[in-house]
Structure formats: C-alpha cells, structure tokens
Length: 345
Picture 1 (cartoon, rainbow, N blue to C red):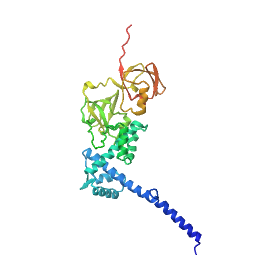
Picture 2 (tube, rainbow, N blue to C red):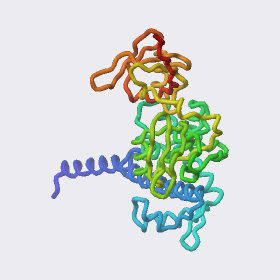
Picture 3 (cartoon, rainbow, N blue to C red):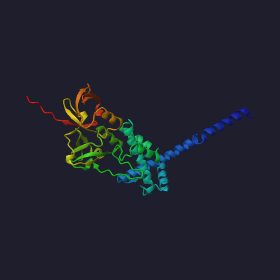
Picture 4 (cartoon, rainbow, N blue to C red):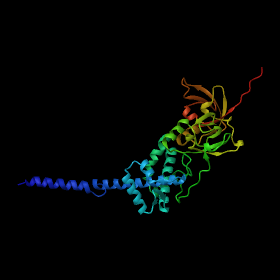
C-alpha cells in the first residue's frame, strides 16, 4: 500500500505542475499557444508585405515565390494562404496572389510601421544604417495602430523614410516616388538621389560600401550594358547596372548643378580654402547636432589645420578654432572650394 505521505507529495506535485502549466496568461500552455498565434500572425504579415511590394513594382507574386523566399515549410505557407483567403485578405487564383481591400489596408499598416521605425532608428539612435532594415523587420509586427500614431507624431509625421521610401499615412495614402533608376537616364544627365532601395541585401551592401547618400547630386558620364559611371561630390563612382538600378534619381536642370563646386570636406587638401555649403541629409540626429554645435554651418570658411599620421582624423580651422573630426564625419559636410590667386611679385 502506497504511503499516504507519498500520495500527498504526488498530489501536491501534480497540482503544482498543472498550476505552472495552465496559470492564466503566464502558464507554459498559454505561452506556447501565444507563441504559435504570434508566429502565425508574423507569417500572415510577411506574406501581405511581399504581395504589396510585388504589386507596387508591377510584378506578379505566386505561391512558389513565397515558398522560395520565406523560411517556413511549404505546407505551413499554403495553409496560411488558405486562411488569408478565407479572411478575405487576399485572392488566390491559378497560383497568383493579389491583395483584397482589407489585405491592402493591413499591408499598408505593416509598411507604415516598418518605415517609421527605420526613420526612428536613423534620427533617434546610433544604430548603423546597415542594421535598420533588420531591426524594423522585427518591430513592424509589434506596434498597434495607436502606438504607430504616437511614433509618427514623435518623429514629426515624416513623409519619407531614410531610404527615400514614402511612408503611408494613417489613412493609407502614399506619395509616389517621382524619379527613375539611374540606368534609365542617358549620358550627360544630372540629377539628385531621392531613393536607395535596401533590398536585396547583397546589392544594398554594395551601395553602402560606395558611401552614396540620399540628396547627393550627380552627373552621369557613362551608361552602357557593362557599367554606369557618374561623378558626385568630388568622387567618381563606377557601378554595375544591376546595382545602379537600385538608386533612383530625379533629373535636375544644368543651372541647378555644378560638379566642380560641390565636394565633401574629406576631399579638402592641405593649403586649400573652402566654404561650407551644407550638411548632407544622410547626416542625422546627434551627429548632425554635434557638427552644427562645433561651427560647421553654411558660408563658414574652412581650411585643413592639422593631419594625423594616418590622415584620419584631421583638424580643420573653423572660425579661428581648430576642430578635429574623423573622415567618416567630414564626408557629410559639403563644401565649395575657394580659388586662390597667386600673389604678384
């Protein structure tokens, strides 16, 4: 016969286990159930966003495209597509996916959160821009409508994210990008970069490595099937067309641009004098405020004062004050070189 003490211990242990398992909201059962529901929600939202981006670019998205690009089992993806069709989020015919009105509204909310969060990361944090997209990919699933509205207000209701993508309004309105990819323009065209596509990641990283900025002006000097060459802010860039295709520009009039005048401060040489004509839009948040506080403001004359053995950082003479900054910061400061005339003897 089992000892009563042993039975009591088994009973208490069983009760404790069931308590831990089914404790309201915090028990293991509910946490697992919540995780399953959350995973399903994330998958639905990822599918909606992919369909939205395909439709926005004029492409057609199929179930096979989703199976090849989403890290989930084909069975789960197909089951989720069927569920989304039942909820009237999408239409699924002959393997092709299209957003219904309800699905479009939902997709625009996800896109709005993603782009607002990238704006937040660029303006309010020190995260590197190569990490913005990945962080926003996670946060887009966590903010509800009220939190999204508060975030937008906190940022000043921005119209575009740091890549130049339009941010949908709360009502789902979205501004068009008034430009075309660089390869669409002929040689001799001058323009301004208004958008840099951050997907696919492998191409975006190549653009980041080139240190190209939103708002920078450029002059296309060569454009063919093999390469695109252009000048911008004192630098020459040579890109493969597939990379240049992820950079959108708007055309400028010739009188709006002079490639001989606009340089990055990092290109200023010893003995040269220049005046500051602006700070790149790529420079945001605390870095921008610091540069302005240090005196790097429009129309201020500037020269190289001192250089380190590795030429980085360098000290610049600004309003009779020697200020040292790294080249990574100097590249954000745009200058116009002042021509000096040789003294007559």
